[in-house]
Amino acid sequence: MPFTSTAPKLHPNWDHLHTVLEQWRARGERIVFTNGCFDILHLGHVTYLEAARALGDRLVLGLNTDASVSRLKGPTRPVNNETARGRVLAALACTDLITFFPQDTPLELIQLVQPDVLVKGGDYTLENIVGHELVQARGGLVTTIPFVDGYSTTGTIEKLKC
Image 1 (tube, rainbow, N blue to C red):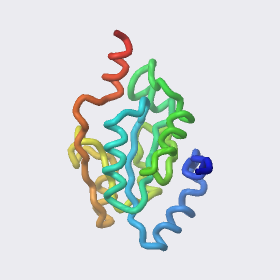
Image 2: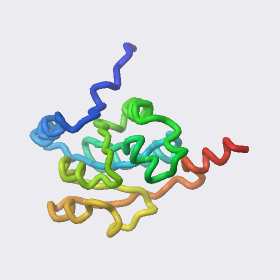
Image 3: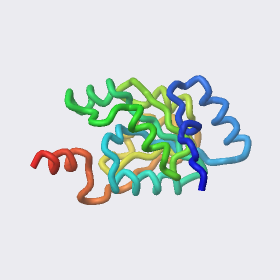
Image 4: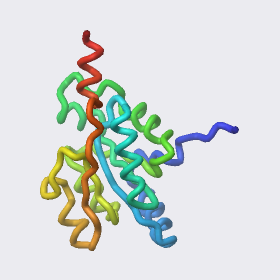
């Protein structure tokens, strides 16, 4: 089987997102959006992303930039830089488009994407999901996906310290 580059899934800036999204919408495809740091990819992440993708036809993933991760998680994070995180996530069959956002929340990106489905992890309540009002006002679905017990980036980092 020939090697397939992950580059077409990566959109480091937002310049061409509108074109891709409009092509999908013209075909009647349901667009799902989620976001996060995805610093050290683990089973919980993969299970979550597969479940998110199952809610629609296309999965758009907003990935926190390195500066954003550091502000949210502390000065020792991220462990993997945004280029590495983006390439690994693009290699997953369940992701269709990955873009980066430098803000602390993905609100601006959600406004641009206008997803049909907005998904976050089970540690969120619907009211605490950034962009929920925007998606619901358009008639979209906002939902959460439970965590896989025993898997977290913080837990992985703690195990490595032993």
